[in-house]
Structure formats: structure tokens, C-alpha cells
Image 1: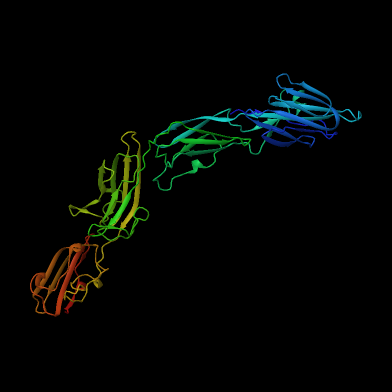
Image 2: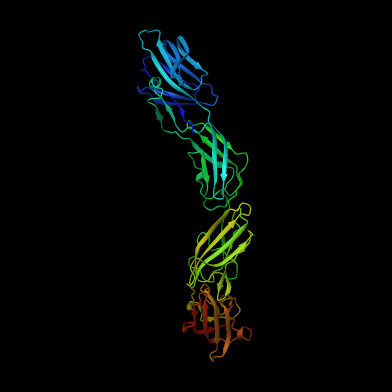
Length: 472
């Protein structure tokens, strides 16, 4: 970056009431000379005409000189005699000195004023970019380069020594404010993206990386330079998005295969779900991807570690839902048995080869449980729609049981009902002989229940035997 050199210092203390101003300046920067006198740097934007005006209390002689840097001297530009006001018009940027002699009072000392004129022609001229699967890097180009600092000199020291003895760097707001923007939300559809690239920057390069842009966009850079001048540039052609973004949508299913609205699995993976925990996953909200690869990792019944792949799937159909199929007793089952699980989705773009992945971690399915309090001791099969069947108490169903055996006997020990099968498929006893014959009489019956949980735990103790009453 090019540093622009400015020079400012008053040489002789003020005696006459003289003033030196620049009425058409866009920016006036006060500074203090070594003598303690307040003077100014004047900044003009672009082609704004440059002029200096001086005024004295009495009729005076005004001698205008400019600092000739290459030859290290002051060159006379203009002389105004017997005036109280004088001006210097259409001058270039540089250092200027005005010498004023009072013509009314010949004993009055000469007053010398100095200033520096600076032409701010800064403008943003273009944007270039470098793009990869991991980031988009935008670079601003300007003419001239950003003004990051400037210097001013003691005129006397400069004229005595061309090595610029006594130069001082002016600090403060000596960096530009650079803002980047896009004509659309480049992270639309992304969870918690890093948007810090939109914040004011100090340098002309910005990187968008967490994640990279996922939508085509036109980018604009706006710069307020050191002196507050604003310049913008907008690209004429949009930058296509090449990165991909993996996003998992998960829905818990009820035992009958319907979606359950109760659990946001992505944000809050369950830690104590009941087996068989049914869920399905979607990649539909992933962005810019053409191929989808799923892996389920798990820890089942202790022998396997959490990093063991227990299921996998792949598809080229974004709308396809994926149902985990677990190995279980030399077979497959749709859902999670007791254990702890991670799910990973990896997506890939067919056109760019970019890859991204995401995970849902620590889906916990608790061990099986069969609460004896879930077994009722009476039911009323009278067809009124309430308590018509011998079933588990509502809300206490042993959903973590893989299968159950239910046997009911009369007081004489004759079998009147039997069920053996999946726990979630049991529809209960309706009070008829073997569920299809004649109605059984009101009275006392005996039941025996046993079963096995999805983790292999057996439940067949005396706790699951008891008396059952039929009332109509």
C-alpha cells in the first residue's frame, strides 16, 4: 500500500491576526505545530477545485510559496500587494507557505502560515475471488491503494535536510472501514452460520469459510477511506456456489409408523428413548449435493464399540427417507435396540466433487423395562368402548419389550386365551374364549405373562402372574 506523505508546521509565532483557510475542502484536519499553534491539513475529494484563502486585519502584502520537494526549496507562486484578503486558486496538492507583512504598521513582524493540501482520489476499482470447497476469498482492488497512514514534516527541518529529519507519523483513524455484502442470503438454509465477514474489516481481503457460500450471489464492497470518503463496487457477474452443505432432518416414529411431533431429534437427541426406537432420517435439506452416504455407529449389548458401523445406506435421491435397519439376532429390525448411537451424513456434489458431513451424536436407547404395575387386574368387555379388553394400562405399555407371552386360565385351570408375539402387535383379550368363541362368564381368572426385551433381558418371574376379574 502506498503511503501518502503530508507536511504541516507553522514556522513563526502569530503576530498579525491572519487566517489561512480552504473554503471548498471536504475535510479539515487540525494539527498543532511545534510552536503550539493550531493549523490544518485540507483534504479535497476527486475533482473538487482546490483554493486557499487568507485574511489579515490590516492592509498587507501576501507572498505565496510552495514546497518543492524534489529540489528541497520553496518556490514563489504569487504575490498580492496592499490587500486584506487574498486567495490561491486551482492549485495542485502539496505543501504551501504564506508570508504576510503588515503595510499599515511597518514595525509589525512578518506572519508565516503553512498548510498541506491533499487530493483524495481513492476509489474501489474491482473485485476478484478465489474459490474452493472450503472457502470463498474476495479481494478488493482500488486506486490508489488504501491510505493506511500519512506523515507531515517540519518545513524548516525539511529544507535543511532532505532526509526528512523530524518527520512524524499521524496516528488515530488511520485505517479504512471496509464492508462486504451480497445481494442475497448466501447461507439460507444453514444452521448458525458465521456471518462475521459482514462486519467492518480493516483489510481488503475477506474469507467466507464457516460455511462457504451456498448460493450464487453478487458481492459488493464499500469502503470509507481514511478521510471518510465512500466508494463502492459491485461485481457484474454472480459468483456461483460450489460448496455443499450436509443437513440431517430426523423424525421419530410411533409404533404404528406415524411421525411423532414430540421430539426434535436434531437439536436434542434423546438420551433415554424406549426400544424399539423408531426414527427415520432425511437429507432433503442438504444444499448443492447429488449423492448422500449414511452411516450409523453404535454400541449394542456391550460387545460393540460406539464407533462400530451398525448400518449404512446411500442414495442419489434427495427426497428419499432413510430408515435405520439394525442387525439383531441374526436378522434385521427397523429401529434402534438399547444402546448408544451416532448418525453421520456425508454429501457430495457430482459437478464440483465438494464434500461435507454432519452428525447427530449420542442417541441413547435405555435398557428394556417391564413394570408389573402395567398389568391390570380387571376389565369390562361390555362393548361400551371403555376398558373392553385385557391390555396393558395406558401409558405404561412395555414398549421396550420385543415379544410377550400372555396366557389366561379359568379357575379350574383350563386355558381360555393365549397370545405369543411382538409386544407392539398385541391387541389384547376381548373376554371371549380364545378371542373368537363365546363370552366368558364374569368372575375370576388367572394370567401368566412373560417376555423378552429388545436387549435380550427376560421377564418371566412370579411378579408377572396374578388374578384377573371380568365384570360386565
